[in-house]
Length: 375
Length: 184
Image (cartoon, rainbow over all chains, first blue to last red; front, top):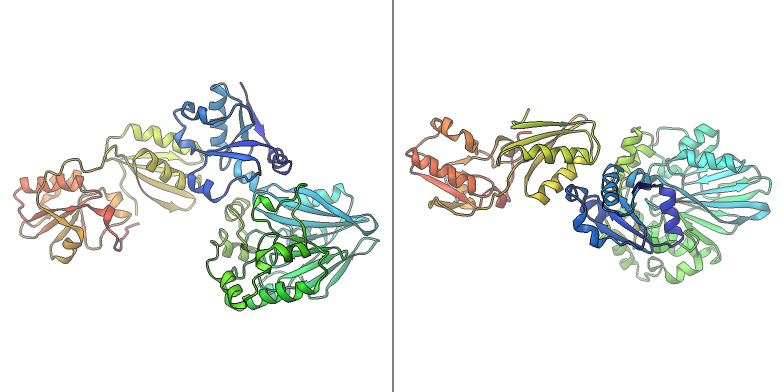
């Protein structure tokens, strides 16, 4: 039997469509423990490839014959080897092309909804890393918010939709992934906006993103308006799009809230975070649909694969929005925090333009889950 | 500095799973106790070699990074556990540290390089016979290795050469929780 090669896009479909899949992950136990391909109906078996060098006979009884089986490793080589062994043993051998590296880089564009006058809002779901980017499209123009570094995906998408990218925003200086914003702006001639309070150390030119900054996209003039909402970083800014959507960056997620410690100033910023979540956001309409810059767990995905929920619903359900006592809030967001994202200090340096690592180094830096939230 | 190895394997430019496949093959040709040096450029090889060695019972000693090349050191061992303790004069590591004598580390040079007790003298077990003249019969000697097995043999050897103030340190470096000095 031959060996089947699956693309990350095919795996993404399985995740979004809630299909079953059996994943034989042949990476190290530590790597698997830290980070894997999440799916609602996925089952897993983790056996490092080096324990299978003598053959797969011992594990065959643990591998189902009535569902799709996909072998996954870090970069592809070991999963191909194990898939071939499965094939020789009479099973269907399939492996993930490019391994977890490619999975981490894959973006699935999903339409969130229609905007006034025929506009559209798209969410780019980076399933492997939990990053969410956005594109607002309206009559020949586009604005991009929180683009990740795979800039071709955004520029190709814009070409497909026949729109010019006019505005590029980062809600804050990211610490968990490398921003593609500056690069997209440079190649398309778009204006690149950054909150100045996060940009004190950046070494390139940008347009300041201030409270009240508003741009209009396309002939139907879809408003993209900025609201200063510090706490994850001192510059963190949210957007209201078309009076309907609230892009919260890394301040508010579906099932968690932002952590204030990634720039080393948790104690200073916890008050800002409290004020943003418990005062500024409270003044907004509960009907706004929250679109965050991350998701942490697969359960945060809606049935269509988007990550979105009404602000009112989050006020009712999100634990981080329901801690009455200020001292308790302070303790929740500054103590017992999860480990910081891989290489977060280096990633901040890249996003400030201070260092320019190679593509391979960028991949290394971004390995692992995003860990931007406090649950 | 370069670290002494009995065999060098070049796995540079190879990607996973080849560094491990080749390492596994190379180590099969070594005898117990010998050191294998694996040069690789695949960054993932560091975690994988360590985990693989652990899973099959070889001793992963450590990795040195020289530019883009990772040099991994592994000691072949099918069995390092103390099965019989032949040398009777033993001492605990903590006790030995309080006394005035010499800590003699008989592990391989590579093991010593990746972490030893400050002030310890390194003479690998295999070189002890030839270098016995470097030791003083009047001084107390506390012989240490990783688990106590090699130091047991070394202590017997010293006694056979007329040394009387010899102690085997048990259990050995595996139980050492103090600072480690490195020569890498």
